[in-house]
Image (tube, rainbow, N blue to C red):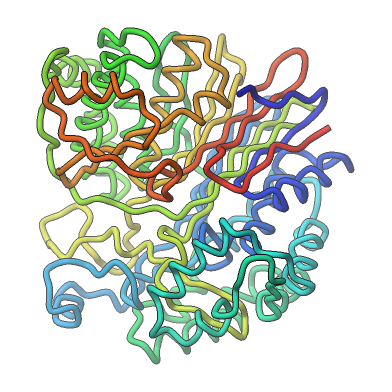
Length: 515
């Protein structure tokens, strides 16, 4: 399996209709960021089980001369209270879905912020294809239907979600008039229509009725943030990642630890063992990444310190597995959009509802599904991830751009919650150490370390010899089906003198498109 090459520009997304929307923008002269936003809007229509207009967005953009990082991350509502949440749940743990998990949706503000600074087209221009798909509909594939059916079954008691998706069947046209209304309103009135207008008012009315924590004032005061990226090294290249509250630092830590280990060659038990052990330690050190900005910055500096990296690497026995150092697992329902334009621009935009349809709280008159980012909080007051007004939850989103000799060489991102940094590590080890094509590296069977401990899941198709070698080293393994949503899906776009090439994950409905 090889990546798809183009002479001028390309885009990779997890749904072919979104890739087509982005490619239309590139062909008409739009830049990589324009194309990525157009594709992201389309994904909210055709893959609402991955992302949407009620989620968050994190982006990294190379404009041809400078690297920009953007955090479109919403905070917990001003009604957040540990004691109240504990009483409401009857537990010392946050629920995984429901109204308590809804934080301020930040994606809409993010799209407008990104376009204002780095785009060449307006939201109205870029939303034409997504509006058409929402209003006129599209035929849902068997793959998409299966995922929707899981959500409809899981949220059988949520009438809003049932109203939008209850009739989805393979090959049937899905029309979303409420979402079309949202897109039209945003195109005409801008983000204020959501954060201080009729769309946001409907969101708050719904949350008020079901016990949510977000208020109208929380929406009105939301602001996205332009941030400095953080950087690490692996196999002779520099990798740029996003700072907290994303798990970008944990991804860089895994790469730094692996860079000090005897990794062997691609596809061997030695390679898989070393990467698994590096991931265990990176996930264990991830907990402090969701603290307030000052504490989080100090935590990043501490875990990426060369002495700490060396200490972590020295803990790893090349012959024996060690137990996972338990932390809370995070699920994932995420969409990655990667685009390269003919002017040297590169965009990596990752947008998410966290888990599938997110909280299960839907606003059918506007076609919105509200994310469940707040499920990443804890109800432990001593934790840096404790729920509190205005606090940001841990984000597993990890857009990354690889630099070789100071120039951008590849954008890489994946879905899959905790597995995002695991896919990143495996793919970069294959491409940078062994020269494996990104498409093949993405297609290879994966494993998934659960930070909560327990068995390591692996996809069917992993070499039985490798499985035996890992078990002989003491790894507790459990086989899963290839392509299960928990293993995520990744995308890559490389740039070079002959033009860009891109790869998508066969686990998705994706496509690489360009010209």
